[in-house]
Length: 237
Image (tube, rainbow, N blue to C red):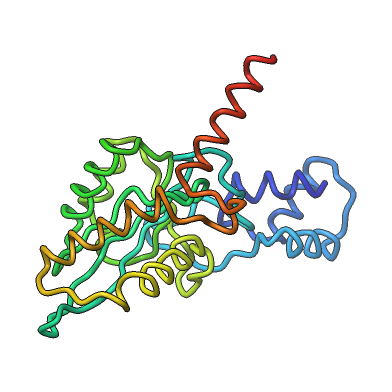
């Protein structure tokens, strides 16, 4: 019954526990509303927001399942910093939730939806195409330009709930490392200089920086190791 409650909640994203209870009774389940409500809460299926447009909804209700392979889910966000002369700029950050690799770090004074789409195209040419990208409700991520790009590329945009940055914890953690290990200890004389130094940090992060949550492997080593394991398991079958 608990599994059926989750199935109904995912099939009908705007149904609360009362409607789910009605659906269960119609299907022949003998259960009271209190039990449905208790399981509904335990599964984390509460409706947290009402959205105006379908494309701004998250893909999951309740806890988001962990990524099981490289490029299954990316996370994307912005980080702000400033040049030596005080002029502010932004860094578009992208991280793979499975391998922790960062396929893209791009510094610009400002971004539009078209700029984000173009940057993602360059990242895909270098790293591969993700199945989905987790983002917040920033104007660049909710733009028609990025929506059109996602449709053309076959990528799903997974929007977190407003005011819930922990739902995109992978990028929040990564942004903290970027700021602590690069932005806070480096002076940038120009936007071009910032781009060069941030890109050098990205390459070092992927190839040389050990990651404690990956068993002290680098992101590239971890991705290669898991790929070898899958190949070996496939050969055994």
